Every structure is written in C-alpha cells, then in structure tokens.
Length: 394
Image 1 (cartoon, rainbow, N blue to C red):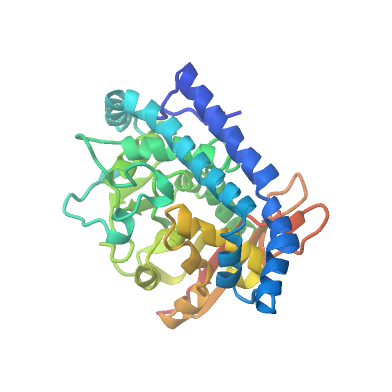
Image 2: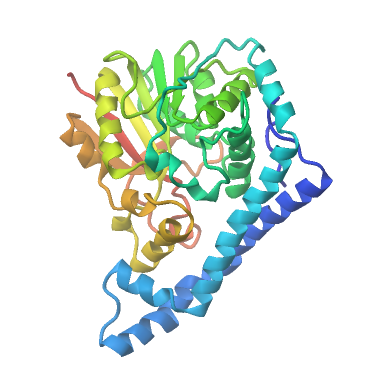
C-alpha cells in the first residue's frame, strides 16, 4: 500500500513503525472519502438554512459561512479528525527517522559520491525567511530548516516519507508526478522547446526535480531551497537515483545566478508557502533570470477561490486556520498572472493542467477548470492550477 521507490536515504520502517504509517494512510483516506464529503451536505441542509433563519439571508461571504460552519458539530468533528490524522502521520514518520538518524546522516554523505555528477552548495550565512521559520508548515515537526546535529538530514527524511503518505501515494512511487506533468505539458505543447538550463525554485527534497533530467537529456538542472537539511537529503536522493542535479541553498527572492541564465524556471507548490511580499519578489527574480523566449511554469494547489463556491472556500480556509498553512488562503485569492504582467512579463496565463483521458497518452493541456460530470465529480480531473508564462524580449 505504501510502496515508495527505494533509494539510499529513504528511511526504513520496522514492523511497528510501518503499521502506524499504514494506519495513518488509511485514516487519511477514510476522512477524505467517507467523512469530508459530509461537510457539503451539512452546510446545505443544516448550516445555511439555520443561518438564513437567524439573519434573514443565507451567508454571502466565505467568512460568514465559515463562522457558521465552525459552530456545527459535524464540521468540528471533521476538523478535529483531519488535524489528528496530520499529527498521527508525522509522528509515525518522525519516530522512524529519529531512531535511525545517525545512520541516515552517514548514508547521505556516502550517497554524495555515487557518481551521478550533481553538486551541493550550502550557505551557512543564508538567513531563512521568517515566513518559513516561524511556523512548522503543515504541522511537520521542527519545520523545514531545523538542525540538531552536523550534516543533519532529519527534516528531509521526514518530508520525503511524510508527504508520500500525506497524498496517499497519488504522486507516484517516486513522488515526481508534478514534475512529470510540467514536462508532459512542454513536450506536447512546445515540442521544439529544448531548455539547456533549468531551475527548480523551492525544491524541498527534489521530488519533482528528478523528473527533469530524463525529460530533457543533456540539460543542466539546478534546484534551490532555503533549508539545508532538505538540500542535503535532496542531493543524496538524486545521486542515489542517478539524476544529475545541482542543488544550492538560496532564497528564490534573490539568487546569485546571472541575468538571463535559464531557459526554464519551474516550481511545484512553492507559492502557497510564500509570504505575500515575497511572492512578487520571486516572480520578479524569475523575470531577471529568464533568457528572452524562456519559460516559467509554477504549479500550485488547484481551485482558486474564483472557481469555488462558498462551501469549497470554507474547506480550503481550514488549512490556513488549523493546519499551519498561513498563506493558503492568500494564494487562492491571488492573481499570479497579473503579478507577472506587472513586473514585466508580456504573456502570462493561469489555468488548469489536465491530462488526456486516453490511456495511451500523457498529453497535458492548459485550460479552464473542467466541468463537473458523473464520471469526474467536483473537477476530479484537475490536478493543479498552473501559472504559466512565456517571456518575450527584455
């Protein structure tokens, strides 16, 4: 059930640890498939009618409905179980990682000499932005940048295994589906586009990054993040998988790469963990780093509020208020393409990446949110909202 692609630094689990991870996996599926959908029924049949009776009209804003939902026992139960499942998931992984941390640190150092040809450059003087250090994002113990020993990869090991369980393996055994999706989009829509230099911003442990070397053979792939424990792990992981990637500890708001250095800049769920002011800085930095005619594609969690009804908006708001995702609501309310145009990009589009339904095709197109159908309820075909830009001349 939890078959994840093996590599030298993937934390192993003994019998009891694996049993707890399997429980967390099943617990999350149960909540999302059997309990979560009840929020809509409760809102439509109980919460909204009650609010309308009390005030003379149904809630007209996300905040009004959210306040009404917060007083309903079913919604409270769902929220409590959802937060509990998140904590159980991280605890099941953290216990396993802590038990074997010295060995994982040593394995990571050894993996760096495997010979894939990548590199790692850390900057001890780099200040981790407060918006990243002040909160344990999505309740991951210690957050991304905490270090407790020399050559620490603890945060990377927890992130790699934990996020795989968090999405119930839906990103593939290598957890690289978002990277493969962007590669598929570029391959099918821009078949002549052959980027020589690629940059992945906010790469974490390089799960999506490893999709790019095989998709664009001969390209030079760079990946940056502010957290040293993630990068140590990412480098060892990539080397162990035979993927040549150059990792460096940098803030995406202001990197040390020269102007016009990259043909392709990507990110995968970076923006919803980025403060409002930093978001514009990052897009501006992309403009500086892209060569004329280069492209950037930023994949984000789908369904911006403009495409949601109030009930969906309330469910998403729960992440900001209760799951240590302080910028989740903000990114769902932000027109990233408008920011891109404001900082100098000529063409900027946002929409949804959708894979072809044909079983023998991986063609991916950009378009509006697919309509709900019996076969695909509530936009099930939609993986992520994408912010896509093709840059003109500087």
